[in-house]
Image (cartoon, rainbow, N blue to C red; front, side, top):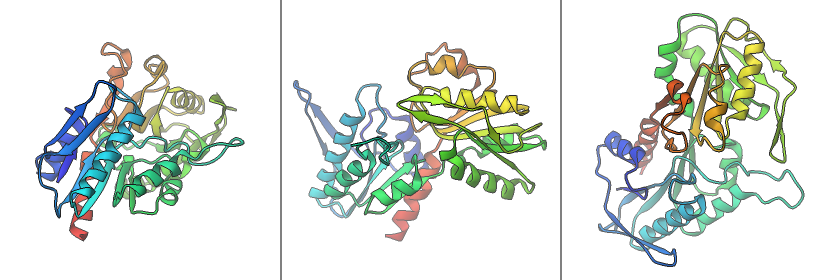
Length: 316
């Protein structure tokens, strides 16, 4: 059974089509004081149930409200006899706070994991966790982080012309993510693909960079890969640095397009030739007439989730 807690979710509809199932009915009531009640309108006894809700903020609810709704509905399904309940969160809130960097810091990812475990969630599937190792270590239940680069194949095919190609990380923290894509591309294309990393530091929300590029990108089209795009500043700075190091063009790719603050203007920078994100987060924050939309390509990650669900369901 597949449930969607986001009314009219295009992602959930795409996932249902990939799985060739109907979205199961549920009821949600919201009370005048802001509380809500959710319940399935079908018998879930013995079912292998999957509950879809991206935990990004907006356009109506905050990440905190969505997290509560997801937890409450998963718990309700368990209460009414579902055999297994899997939370499908294309975007996972609080995944970025996976370690302490300041005195008395929280570890939000671990706290979210404890909440999922406490209400009886059997498994969690997300797209592109910020730090896969931290994500896996935070949970004591089976979890899956899908690699967003697996959804970008058609985009690469349309851009690839046999010339020099490289994959780059916009910061040291994303090196492993970029290396995995580079290795996959080399196997797929049957030829060498370069690798680079751009130096970046963030402290108290302030970005700094030395303009250093580790790796050779001269004469290459660069696929710049990150887990998410927030304000766009990280991608813009990295793209400018890569162009300065001789890259012929930079295609900025990310699993999640949050596009907060002044992202529409920042990402319009000519250093970024194209912008590619998945449909894990709707692009509601980008104005309809924003110039950046002219170079934005959105690819579906629903097939990745469908494959993961089919694999889990078949394994019992």
